[in-house]
Length: 134
Ligand SMILES: [Zn+2]
Ligand SMILES: [Zn+2]
Ligand SMILES: [Zn+2]
Image (cartoon, rainbow, N blue to C red; front, side, top):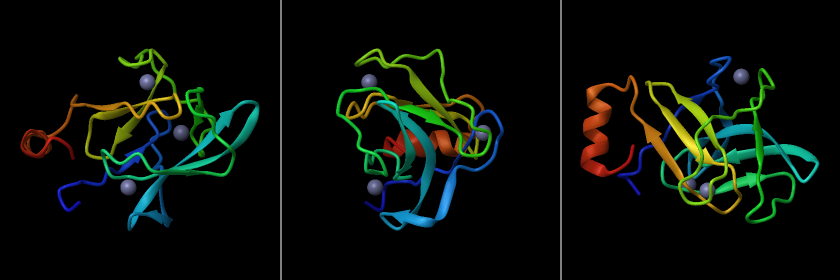
């Protein structure tokens, strides 16, 4: 577990932090987003460890169905043109505080996500190459 690195992310549109330091998962601040799923609105908190798929939602999420994610600050839906390699669902972009983006699949239980290294410092890139994640 000590090799896992926790992500700090912000909204790609309004650039406000999405981290919730008051609600932790695995000892780290969670990533807090608003969601819409099967005509219900709620909130989801994602574990910030890259490679950990634990999350807590306050509405019931059905496996294999799509979740819509919204920024809790600007209320914009977070969508991208990228589609999941595994299931073809749209991917949600989140900006990392140190540069670059992480993309998450919007299909419940798909768990696919990947990092995009655009503008990421060499130090982080090196860490990724050594450990496989950051
Ligand atoms: Zn926003
Ligand atoms: Zn976790
Ligand atoms: Zn997927």
